[in-house]
Length: 172
Image (cartoon, rainbow, N blue to C red; front, side, top):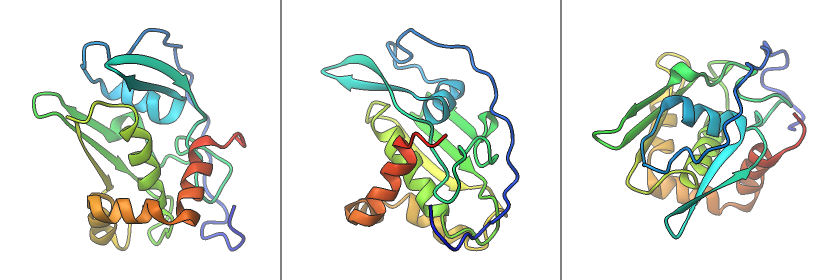
């Protein structure tokens, strides 16, 4: 956790109860927004190894600044995920807790890294901040959806460590 908190008193919500899923969510390449939400927030990750799905469990995505999940802070919800299977597109819209959140790009990187390992490469993933929810919305959206900028950001060892801590933390 960073020392100088940007949002020292975030509103924390209860986690929603989920039905445990034990089957391979992506055996037919159909994508359901609820599946994506489960993957992002409730730790079901399907890794495609030689075309065969394997389920691996990882931790909830933790907020970079607080020991709470993105769901608990209402940064991400089921309604913020849109899937267009015909076009092979997934749109994730998240809402930072405050308009000048400097961690918005880190949150977006966490979402992208998690999805990159979960879905076949033919899905195009767009990650955006909700309209009007961030003071620098256009810049954040541009950075999160530029492959070269994302790759460069993930080459930074400090930033990659922060992303990994958010993805694999057991603080929740």
